[in-house]
Image (cartoon, rainbow, N blue to C red; front, side, top):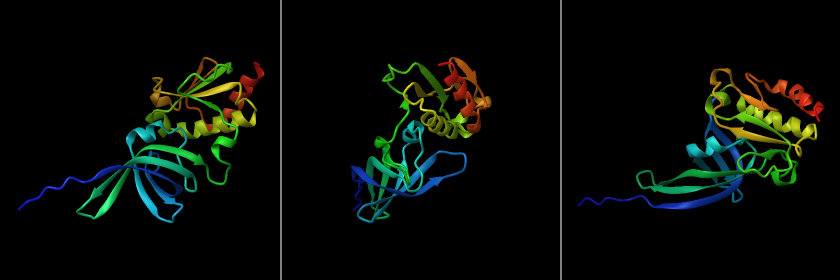
Length: 194
């Protein structure tokens, strides 16, 4: 008698520390190993939508909140985890993110008090050419220059300059092939206009 078995599917939510990341150079993170407070470690694959929406990728030592689907695989007698939501609770060796000064970030227009916007392409071609590093350099330099209250940082889709990425727009002027070490002079020009 043949019995077909449908794997059981349920939701999971875990908070823990990243112990390893499945990441190939120049690509997005595919999975994370998360060690929870109880000492157990989980290998959790990241849904495509998750790594596309992440502005800052997690690194080893970060505390994460991960939610998604857990499926039981009877042949391997094991559970498989796939995350559809990832939140970075604290970066490694830093304060929790909600206590540190932050740059006004994308999505919804909460930046009514911000006069200037910096747009940064976060699509795959620009990210492969250094878009994530550019974003992190912008965040750090905005906080260091005390501009994080006056300037909003917004992740955008493709700006049509893929081969000349990463692309960003500052004060309605487009810049291509921007390196993280070029961020400070660009922000100085923005600060001098104030």
